[in-house]
Length: 425
Image 1 (tube, rainbow, N blue to C red):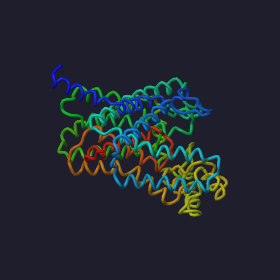
Image 2: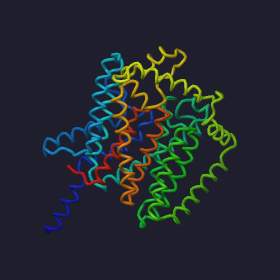
Image 3: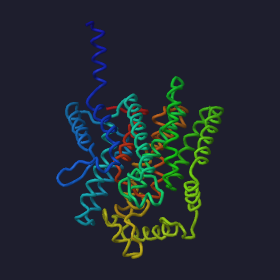
């Protein structure tokens, strides 16, 4: 073997490193997350099957750090926000009940996940492959959701009676599970818009997950997801105009609108009626809504601010929101504030609130700003920007902090920021 061939072989082997294999495995195993039977039983606790892979990824990261002596240069604002979040979490635990200490540990672990993922995904090609895998598993979860919707064998029976789309194992996770659908829809849309010119066939193929996940989004009946996705789509399309592609935008916009209209036309009458009803209830304050009405949400909002006012700086402690809420209004029985940011303010105090805002908003806003400044982007960064922005907006109407899927996507978004800015170890 020549010296040149040997060098090329070493380069190829270097690219296929253990960290990349672990992060790809972690992403592929995320497909099991919504399936209740796909859990590990360890010490009487049930956990997702990919947790050992995540632990191995952390171990490899620590070993590499000790071996090389070089740490990862994270964006200072993100790193500061993470430390402040952990400090607020530990401080609030002084006010929490012992039964919720496990929840404190889960929050701490979830906060660390984005930094581990970002430290592993250090090259653009690794990032693109990772986002591609995310799109593939999202398509698989969407198909699984259709199976549950039409057979009623997935999710909670009470949810199916209400006509909700079923990729969930308890009724309380419906808003979290819609993230799989919106994530798939926006990644497919960004691929369709921003993939390179040489990928015409792949752009055509991307219409399949785009249509399937778009239909799933409609069948989710999630008003918050509809609003958040609409805003994110506008964010994707507006920069497209800035890139001087208005004629192509017009064609694609016409195609997209035609697909939506066709989907609505061919929906069963009962489903169309449910979609219309949910749209009408977005601004309905009459109290007729058969789910959580807007009036009840306003009462919950007032109750949440009353809880915040009791301990605005330290918070009432992780897991104690309901206890303090019922002291304010005994008729309110919701465990969460239906707003992730206010929930964190109530439980972790003002420091926890602002640290969460920075953690969740920094990656998509930096990618959007870079998009505007450089007037170009790759489909993976555009898709991550849109899907993170969608969840940031949807979190104004729901509380789903404990989703591994969400924090892994945030890690890929942080990796996109670091890769595009040239930050390295």
